[in-house]
Amino acid sequence: MNTESKTAPAAIFYITKNGCELAGRVADLFPAAEVIKFNSALFAKKWAETGKIICIMATGIAVRAMSSLLEDKKTDPAVVLLDEKGDFVISLLSGHIGGANALAKKIADGIGARPVITTASDVQGKVALDMWAEAMGLYVEDFELLKKMSARIVNNKDIKVKVEGLSNNIKLPAGLVRVKTVREADMIISHRINKKDVLYLRPKVLCTGIGCNRGTTEKEIADVIGSVFERVGLSMRSISTLASIDLKKDEKGLVAFARDNGLEIEFYGKDELNRTAEEHDIKESGIVKAATGAVAVAEPAALLSAKRISGKVSVIIPKEKRGNVTLAIALAELAL
Image 1 (cartoon, helix red, strand yellow):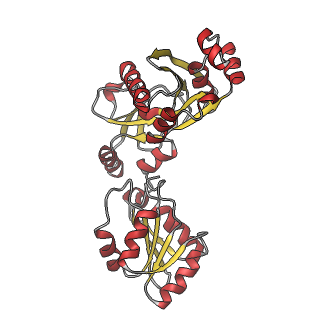
Image 2: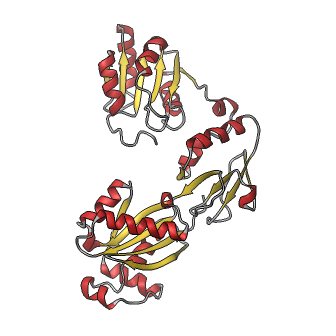
């Protein structure tokens, strides 16, 4: 969602006494929701804090309050608007990515109102590409191109899609048609970097195993990962997780790299790593074993992480040591 970083509860703004009474009914649907008498300063404050804003007021007032706050559909909160009688719930802003359409439907169901949804794909009963991509866990590289593709679908034109590196039974919704070659494609779903100027959706299928010396900096880790991914033609947007040995839980450079790139790190004990190394016939490193008790770190950690995603995994980049960093990449094959 575009509002994952906005953790404050929903904000419900009202102006009149009747609006306040309706706000109380709506608040029952949202634990910890804040009911606030409208003023522009509080509205701006909550805009920066919450992913859900519910307005019970005239549309013009809400639009004027929002006008100076709008930034990007990927970061703006979901905004819905109700009339004071509670007859209609209008999805006003961030209908798909922000979740305003779903929010309007939830409120309408809860208070017995009618949801008003105006996005073309919903009106026509066609797939909303942004919501489909999010549901499939696909990172969208270019939202402007995504908007153009969505426009084609609502204008009854198919999108030609090339799927690379995933299970062949990936399910495409109506309006998306599978093609066999990159040359034919309008859209490519792949963890690999291609040079064709089309829309890329990146599946989270790469697990990166990391070993590093104590005190390795975030910059060195970033440089090694970036250079390896670039050299082998893989997209860093397809990284699902980082993985390492549990001795590295307090490794500041590694933790900082994960935090600054929005990635989770999974840590494994030496026994898990050793069992996986034996299972996959990974060569023992005497230096690593002497230091950690594990026969290897990067490759088995990558495989263990990938196994949490899929039963079909493989090492696609065996361990590489560069300076203080050792890196390996495993692929988790998905059936989306």
